[in-house]
Image (cartoon, rainbow, N blue to C red; front, top):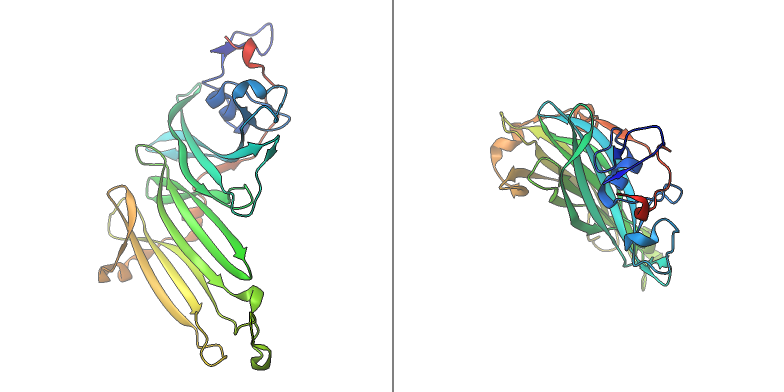
Length: 293
């Protein structure tokens, strides 16, 4: 599949871009892309004219980043797929978005598709997926960390999940409860506590990464601090709890091994400065599928 970008240039294989960014990666996956709208409509023939009334799905990039794994330069594209109804994205509170992830490898000249998964996980609210970032999951292992939250009738909940990029296919390997509260329907004034207005409670979680011996994947530690059910209308003392998760058989699983407490904490800059997150650039024109060969 090729397209002539300029009449005096040799054909460019859009499935193997020379430059990796949100525009070129989306074009490589779908064979068409609307740069002005920064997305693709499915079925794809609706993309160029941006006919949302005839489409059933809107696809847009969430994150594009590059990193080096096993000595190879890699690029990752994460996108969200939103369902459309009568020409608009469904944005009800309970509606999530499907997250897709695709990985490319650079061969010195072009970015070659390596692996991907159309449906990795559904997440988010109001039709939108949560934000994500590239992280290091081990000494030569990588992943995407997504964080989000929601409010339901005054009750809040925060969550995080990790998608591994170093397995055979992109895979959600861990999901964590990062905290909850009743902050939208509470008071610490005992005299005001009646009906829906309750005593306040809250707990929050923090993720840290640990190197345990020479294991290829980091251990993940979740520290939760807070209180849950107030007693007699007053806020109880905060409690701290540590949970450990180890990578085994393609996923992170809870572990109570005492030796994990002695594992060395990996500095945040090592975990979170895992590569280069890219912004979208104006690198290609809108492309009509019928002109592709």
